Structures are given as structure tokens and as C-alpha cells.
Image (cartoon, rainbow, N blue to C red; front, side, top):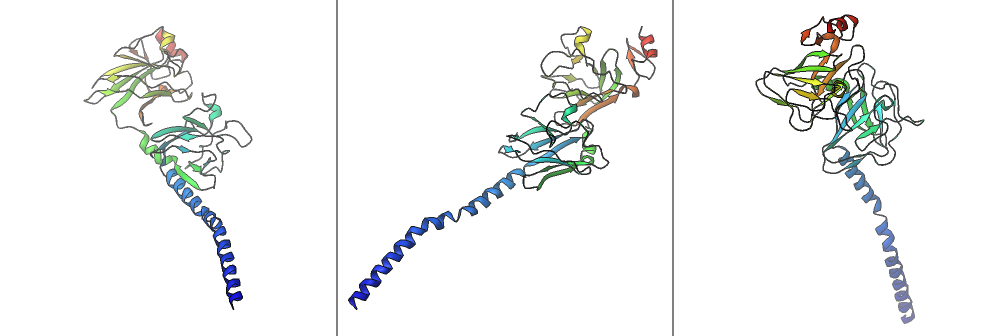
Length: 307
């Protein structure tokens, strides 16, 4: 009996030692639970993204991160809602910083940017290179941001933003002179409006100015003149009545902006809403302080009146 008891004791000790040696493996088996929690955290993080605007005319959209953590879109891709087009996944870090906005260009082959920047992401073709053909060109179209797991993270129709774009500021362009590259902006309100942070863009050419830096005040019930190619007219310095289209690289713009048939000008607020918009053919072209016929100033009749 003693021998049997000693044998059982050794056997029990051996089994206990083996059981203890396996305990780390059981601890490692819990790692998938941590992975699930990380995935859930990532999904929660992505929920802080929103489309701020979709501009089908210029084939771009703005994505804002309302969260307190940066979000990397590497591996995500874009898809339009109606046309069935989808981009290649974003390669490498494409970070939307916390509390910040990036612009996604859906036809970057037609925009002025030669390459992506930290705040400008491109729709890239699956065969390589930036997409050139229009994406947001179908009735009732919109844009989706899709995760690497093919889950739709963001989805928005263009119509959602059309009603939001027109700002309620009492600003309007009262005249455009495409020959002189200038427009008169009127403030019909009873309070001054400061254009600091606003920017200009043309309707047809996809040109966009730098933002107005520092106070650029349009007085209550008053006018200012906005020059879209000030350097072309030998102008170098702004004043309280004359605001300049400034290049993003610095300095007043020299090349024409309003040189496309049916072109016009937009004043855009810092949040992307259109504060004022006018097409040249819809306004009387102003020349030398006199109102010309309601036609494009670059037509032959307008030119003759200017001379």
C-alpha cells in the first residue's frame, strides 16, 4: 500500500507540474479578445468622421474629423453612389488630424494640384495615376468612404449639401468686369462683414485663391472691389476698398481668371459655404465706371464700348 500511495503521489505531482506549464498557453489564447476590443475602438474612432461638403462641380469633398484622435485612412477607398465607380485604396498614411479637415479630390487629374498633400487626398485609378474623368456626374449621385473590410464608413448624397451651400450672409456680386478682372461685392446688411479666412474661386476654371489673411471688411451697406488678377493691372498693395486674389504660393495673381466663356466668381466662407456667386453673362459688365450692355465684357461689343 505504501508503494501504491508513493506512486500516486508522484503521478499527481507530475500532472500538476504539467498543468502549471500549460497555463501560459491558456493566457495566450485570450489574445483574440483583445483584438476584438481594438477593432471596436477603431470603429468608434471612424465614427467621428463626417462629410462637410460635396462639390460635384469641382469634383471634391471635404471630410472633417470631429474626434480628439488622428484617423489614418490607409487601406480605405472611395466609391460613388450611382455610377458604381470605386478608387484604389489609399496607400501609405493618409491621416485626418483630430479636429481638422481634409479635401478628397475625385477627379484630381483635372485640378491644379500636381500631387497629394497632407490635406489633399486623390482618387487614384486602380491601374495607377490620378483619376481624370468625372465621378460625381450622375443625377442624385453622392460619395462613400469605404473601410478595408468593405464597410461603408461615410455615405452622403450631393443633394444634402446643395441646400446648405448658400450662405445667409447679405453679400452679393453686383457686377463683374472680365476685361479688367474685377468684381464689385456689395454688403446689403446693417453690419460689417469680415472676409478673413474666406477665399475666391472661379466657376469654370477650377482656380482657387489663397484665403484672405487679416481683416478684410466689407462695410455695412457698402461695396468693395475684388481684383482677380491684380498683378496684371500693376497693382501691388490692397487697401480698404480693393481686395486681391492672392496666389497660394504668395503674391497677387497675374494670370487671368475670368477668361472662360460663361465664367464667373464665387466667394467661399471658411466652412465651405458659398457666400456670393455670380456668372459674368448674368450681370451687366462694368467698364470704366459705366454700365455696359448685359453681355460678357470680352465680347466685341463690350470691347468697343470700353475703348
